[in-house]
Length: 287
Image (tube, rainbow, N blue to C red; front, side):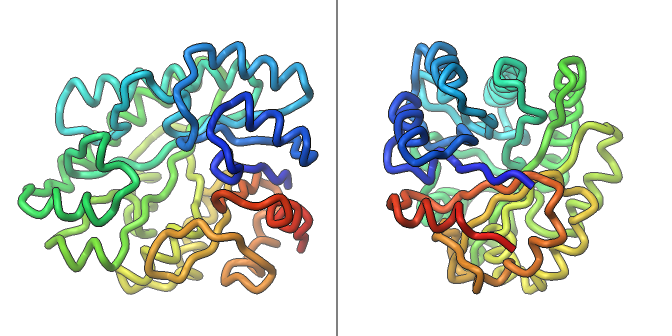
C-alpha cells in the first residue's frame, strides 16, 4: 500500500509551491487535484516535480482550465459534455507523462450547475430546487461517457477510476430527489454490471460514504463491504457524518480498522489545508 497526499492537503494552490512544500515535508507521492489554480505551463511545472523525484497521480478537475468550467460526465448540454470528455482525455495524457496507473474523477450528476456553484452545496441545492431531475437520462449519459473515456484510457494502458459522489442531509432537505450519481452501493454495483469495460473501477472516498450513509439511511460499513470488489484506490478524510468536511483522520476514525483490507491499493490523504504537524501525523499513521 502506498500513501499519497492530495494537493488539497497543502496550504497553497500552485503546482510550484506544492512541489516545494512536498520536498520540504519529505512527501514523495502527490495527487494533483481540483484545488489547484490554472497553470498555463502545467506540463513544465509537473516535469520540474518529476525531476525533483516526486511521483504524481492525476485526479478530477486537474489540470484546471483558464476559464472555469464544470466537469460532469452526465452533463445536460452537449457543449458541457464535450468539454468534460475532452478534459478527461487530456488528464489521461498526463497520466502517461507522470507514469501513474490511472486517472480518477467524480461520478456525474443529474442537474446543470455553473462553475460559480462548485464547492458550495447550499447554493447548489437552492439552484436545483426548480430543476427537473432525470436520473435515468443522467445515468445513461454517464455510462456512455465513461465507456468513451475508458476506451481512450485503454489505448494508453491506463485504468479509469470513478469516485463515489456525496449527498448530504442538507441537500435532501432542499430537493425532492437525489441528483448525484453513485452515492450508494446499489447504483455502483449496477454501474459495474453495465459498464462492460475491464479497465474501469472505483476510487472510494470514505468521507463521502459516511455523509451519504447519513443522508440515505444506509450503513457505511456495508457500503464499504459491497463496493470493495470494485475499489482500486481510497480517499481518506474524516467528518461529522453530516457534511463532507475533509478533516484530518486518526486511528479512532470510523473507517480505520477497515483499512487492513485495502492494503494492496493506493490510499490518498484528502484532509484539507493540513498544518505541517498534521501532515506528518497523517503520514506516520499505520495499521
